[in-house]
Amino acid sequence: MAMRQTPLTCSGHTRPVVDLAFSGVTPYGYFLISACKDGKPMLRQGDTGDWIGTFLGHKGAVWGATLNMDATKAATAAADFTAKVWDAVSGDELITLAHKHIVKSVDFTQDSNYLLTGGQDKLLRIYDLSKPEAEPDVVSGHTSGIKKALWSSDDKQILSADDKTVRLWDRSTMTEVKSLNVAMSVSSMEYVPEGQILVITYGRTIAFHSAETLEQIKSFEAPATINSASLHPAKECLVAGGEDFKLYKYDYNTGEELESYKGHFGPIHCVRFSPDGELYASGSEDGTLRLWQTTVGKTYGLWKCVVPEEENAEAAKARTTLPGTAEEEIVAEEIASENSDTVYSSTPEVKA
Image (cartoon, rainbow, N blue to C red; front, side, top):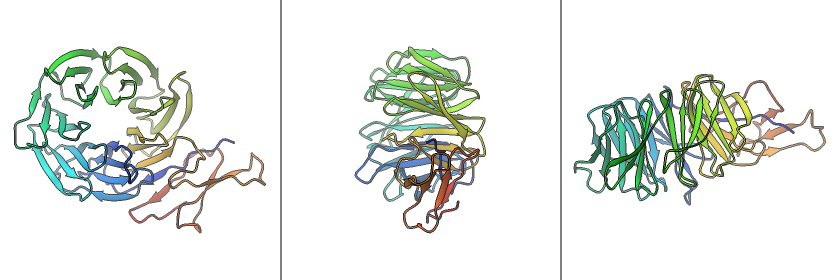
């Protein structure tokens, strides 16, 4: 029986959501951080979307946000010419790193000791967080503003993208190893350590490259301009979202489109799979994040799915109930034309 998606909608932001990132799996579950033009990045429980806290301190749009693996630290990149490091448990601001222009990207090393930043001044900076007052190591070579910068190969290399160029750098020598030119402006980049895969989107293209050589592995063409794509941890499928408000799901091996559906009420700026691959999150111009099940109909997180046995397949409904709200059921009917939402704030309330 085919069932439609019933996403969890996370409200709270007042402007477009432009970046999001998951932590690794911790003893307390995994976590999700979102960057928004409202200047107030938010931390949420990753599998439910429940709001945990808001990091207050930036004086401009926040363009990038990330968590370290164990979700004890967060980092944000903003239009106020700073990057900030936060205690993700208490919410306290730990370090402010001044830049000379808008900062677009932040990424921790695996040991959380160093922070990589990139932005409009075309420079990569590596900060030793044990000595935040010290001058950072600076890597120059980009010819336009840096959109994304990521550690790769066990933090021995750096991958960075400006307008139409992706560059691979050696950390020890601070020199460029290789560069890749693409036909249109790079809209997103994701590094998958298992298998050393780099996911790049530009125009309608979703391209997969070796993170070690930048050689192309494969690429797919989507029906609309894509702003972000993410590869499932098991490399079975990928999701992508863009300018037509839709989310697309493809088989990674064959390129076959598995699903497509209206995901938001505005262009989608960012999509990411959770570390366990059970769901993916999307952030949009409409100011919301939404969480989607990788396998529709599976009981996971707030999705509790029961198919009534006495009804035939055509009339069957997947019943989704949320903890503590048994009297307010969400019923997802089979193959509906639009997606209904589960809307909740910091105190979960359920609306059909």
